[in-house]
Length: 171
Image 1 (cartoon, rainbow, N blue to C red):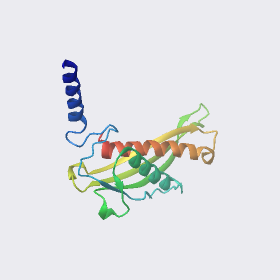
Image 2 (image 1 turned 180 degrees about the horizontal axis):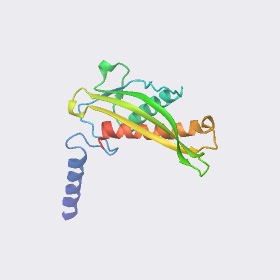
Image 3 (image 1 turned 30 degrees about the horizontal axis):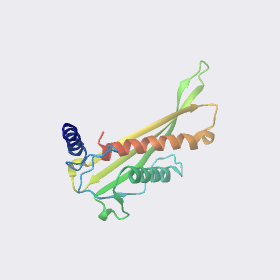
Image 4 (image 1 turned 90 degrees about the vertical axis):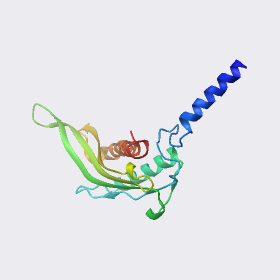
């Protein structure tokens, strides 16, 4: 009997922490129970230096992350989304980060900065307007076009993680 009481107490505590108020999940998101849909608009590239694949890569990474880590239905029309996510890439920049004694760049840094507009139509206190940046360093002996694909893949994953955490995980 004592064991049954313990099990019931543990189950009650787990339910209260995970399902009682309807906003906590094991994926770490804080989405209210009445929020069911999201519209992730295609990422727009506004940077003066443009990587033609970058906007599509970031759009796909965001779609995948929200599909895998939430139960939100993804919709195409902004009017149908309880949540709306808009992202624009504002800069795509390469700069020297380490200089040798001969004043030659030893390392370069590729930095991508994007602006996020997130709207929660049901809970306006969760709305967000914020910039995010991510970078990767690479050996300057390698031309950018040789390492750009791998650098962008890593940067896109970091940006998507940061955007996801700021919008629905609220970290």
